[in-house]
Amino acid sequence: MARTILEIRDLEKVYDGGFTALHAVSLDIREGEIFALLGPNGAGKTTLIGTICGLVQPSGGRVTVAGHDTATEYRAARSLIGLVPQEVNLEPFEKVINTVRFSRGLFGKPRNEALIEHVLRQLSLWDKRDSQIRALSGGMKRRVLIAKALAHEPRILFLDEPTAGVDVELRRDMWEVVRGLKEDGVTIILTTHYIEEAEAMADRVGVITRGRLLLVEDKDALMSRLGRKELVIELREPLKAVPDELAGHGLEVLGDGRLLFTYDTQAERTGITRLLAAVQASGLHLRDVETRTSSLEEIFVGLVTEENGADQSGEAAP
Ligand SMILES: Nc1ncnc2c1ncn2[C@@H]1O[C@H](COP(=O)(O)OP(=O)(O)OP(=O)(O)O)[C@@H](O)[C@H]1O
Ligand SMILES: [Mg+2]
Image 1 (cartoon, rainbow, N blue to C red):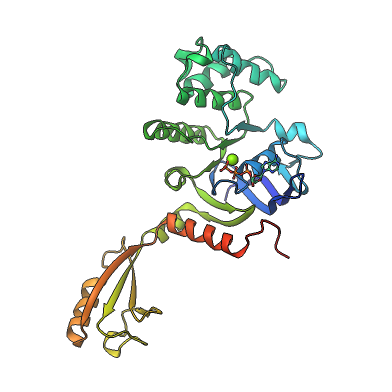
Image 2: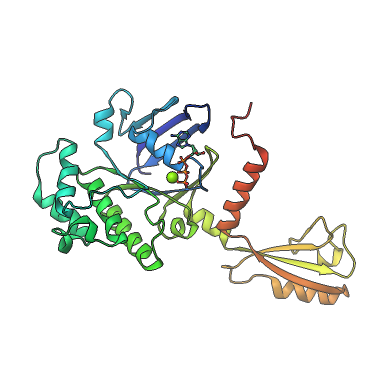
């Protein structure tokens, strides 16, 4: 297993005014992975990134980047990080190449034209290098932000909603760019509202809501859950238990007296035909059949609403 490049321990943020935006968040990021942080508006994604990058003062906890503590060795830690902010904040009259050179200079790194060229080419911006920022499309501006964040050769790149407000085609473009960066060996942490985006790119997924990290899991494991489907069977009479004739099919009885059959859509045999044949043979009267899919979206929405229902105050649980 890859080694840990970023270690976050019990990170807390209480904003002035007393609002707790992060509740003891702990997370290890593995070198070379793409980690997607999913969460609704106001979940604390930008706060988490800001705290790691030194834009937000943490109220508690500890962060180390390749062993450097962000509190006691800030410069060493920060120089390993590239940050692509959520908001586009570029100088409209500056030329693309100059703004990228400038970002490198901010970290005290010596000029390196070959590197700047590599970064601009990687982001398909080389042809635009002498254009003013204001002459670029929205998607290009986002790519300039990435180029700026890469100019000082960071090992970890944070992308805070890289595709917010970007059309579908550009979004896929951006996914390609991010995959390319991963191939270059950059560790990537991105935030997104789009589950589809996490599915497309991430090695691992974390779900954050109301300042709490609710789940961290391999994307593939989540996807195999996504492959599960449910068949709900309603008989003429509501049931209290699975009828003997239908034992051995792995059925469950729902609270409303219907039967639930869960199957794997990727399996060679779903077992549906066999089950329905057994229903027929048993003489039980089928009234209705319904199928449902449990998707990552559902898992996500379920987690988020559950958490919101449990804690409306926004304050730490006692
Ligand atoms: N400077 C601040 N002062 C006080 N509260 C803040 C400040 N910045 C953020 N917050 C609050 O902290 C919470 C988390 O905000 P944050 O921007 O981290 O969320 P987010 O997950 O990035 O949301 P979005 O998806 O909308 O970008 C929100 O309730 C927000 O109002
Ligand atoms: Mg945000």
